[in-house]
Structure formats: C-alpha cells, structure tokens
Length: 444
Image (cartoon, rainbow, N blue to C red):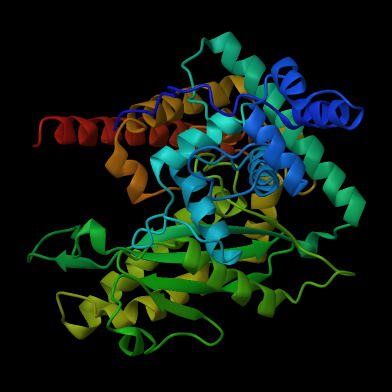
C-alpha cells in the first residue's frame, strides 16, 4: 500500500512553544500577539489555557504503544542483539504482538497469525532512528577475519565476565540444542552385503528433540515435539521417565514449545537467585559453537538409525510406529551420551574452560562465508522467513555469531578429520540450499 504523506501544517508546534506563549500571556501580553510570535493558532492557545493543558499536540491515528513502551522494546532488542541473538523483522513484529497482549493494550494486529503489521514496523523504525535492521554483506577474506575475530573476542569476554560475576561452577553451565530425527525403512535383498536405507516420512513430518547437558556431563531429560496434534496420548507410549512430549502442526520447537521446555528445564535443574544457571542457547548459525553439536549429535544420530534398523529387522516391519521414536532415541542417547563426550564438547568450543584461542579464524572463514551467502540468498524468500523465524537473521550481530562454526581441535589426532568433515558439511549445506532456491524460483 502507498505510504501516507502529510499534506497539512496543522499542529506544527511543540510543548515548549506553548509553555512560552502561556507564560507571556500571564505576564500581560495579548493572546493574539503571543500566538503569532510563537506560531500557535490563537484558538488553540485560548483552549489550552482554559483547559490548563500543556501537552504536545496529538495528530492523526494514535500509536499502539506509548513512547516509553517503545523505548522498552528497543532496549530489549538491543540487549538481545548484544547476546548474539539478533532478531529479524518478523521476530520483532511477533514480539510487538506478544507485548501488546501481555500488557492488555488495544491493538489492530493480526490475531490469527499473532504478528504486528508491516506498516507498524515501518513506523516503529521511523520513531526510533537509533534502531535499525541490517542485512549481512559479502566481504573479503581479510574483512571476515578481522570482523569475526573481534566478535569472537567480545563473546568470550562477555562469557568470562558472566562466569566470574556469578561464580558459575561447571555443573551450572548448560547448553541446549534442538535436532531433528526421522524414521527409516530398510530394504534388504538376498546376497547383498549392505543395507539400503531411506527416509520413510516426508521431511515435513519431522520430529524435533531438545537436548541439554552441562560441562560435567549431566544430561537433562529430552523434550520430543511431534507433528501430530491429535495424537498426544499415542505419542506418550514408551516415553522415558521425566521426558516431555508435545505436539504441534509441524514438529518444530517454536516459541510456545521453547517456553514449555524452559519450565521443564527449571524443574530438572532447580535454579535459584542464590544458585543461578548459565544456559547457552543456539543462534542457529554457529553449529560448531555448540558443545552438543561438536561431540554428541553426530554419533547420537548414527546410533538412533542403527536402533531403527535393528527394530525393523527384529519385528519384520517395514515402517516404525511413531510412538516408538522416543523409545528408540532414548536407547541411542543412553549408548552415546557419555560424560567424556560432554566435557570434550565444552572444551573443544572454548566455553569451559573459557578459551578463545581454541578457534582458528582462517579455518573458520570458509564455513562462515558459505553461511552468509546462503542467508543473504534466502533472506529474500518471505516463505522461508516465515517458515522458521529463527533460521535467518537480518542483524549483523546475529550473523557474527556464526564465526564460531569451525573449531580448531588440533590437540587430538582425530580432530583434524572432524574439521575437514565440518567444512565439507558446510559446502553440502550451501549446495543443497542453492538447489532448493533454484527449484522455488522456477517452480520445479
């Protein structure tokens, strides 16, 4: 829609002009002369003096939030950006809707999609010029190294300050990470030496699992999110003790599911004001900056798919019932989630002990450059942005967190192979995203 352009000069005065005009009238000057001198309509000056109202003029449609409330939203968004969790425009609009609902403010936002409109967001940016949404730019190798070295040093500096301030012990430092799992079919022909596996569900019917562990290898019972809203009771069959099962339309860990997990996490860990907990979240760009990604999830998924294949061979079925997913995943988690791997994950990412020197910016540059290209390409796709509001950020501070995507683990003999695999994984992800974008472009 076209943007409104102001056509009148009505109300072009401020409270200071009105205050000076009122003081001049009280000193004995004529109202008409004071109105002309301070550029205020005479009728307005008479009415304001009669009502004893010295507020600023209100023209047109009033805003949803007061200036004080908008400043609170701006400060919150700036704080989130400083935590390497910068938000894009869709997420900012959702926060505005949640704020209006929480404060019980009358609004005209979209209640079905639970999001504020684009016009409100444009006006919000104009009213708060010190706040802006930025898109990541492609830079040279030297610019990458200088920029990400600075951002990584800032991250580890802030991390070290928080740990020293609250005196966190390693058992109170946690990392949470979401992963996706699928069921598999196995076809086996007589005489074959290998098994050919294929995904039995469509990728849209994925199951999300939220796992968390601390720096001493203590794991929090996972939360499973299934894409079947009408089968909640069925999904709870064979679920391990203390685990959480939830269902929604797509199986994603959205804002509602994340809040449920936080309550579950608080019950399991029991944080207090005197004994707080440091929870390190995933920025969805730095997949090698997360301890669970670094050492747990790869062997965990391999063990899970082996459990799926063993179950189908033993039962003679071609498909795995959805209510068995949690049981099979828990068995794989028990086999792979060890104390040593958790400790190694926190150490390899430099989170505990805090060690920013564990990263190599030159090795990091390759993965980070690919991620920024893919984010910049997918940022123009509105459907992709709405599909996952956490996956693409327009804020450079958020993108800077992807600088931790390749870890220098040259301390062990097998770590160099892992870094090569990480680089290959980045290229594979980039190629896959490029193919998907071409398909969407040509409606393939």
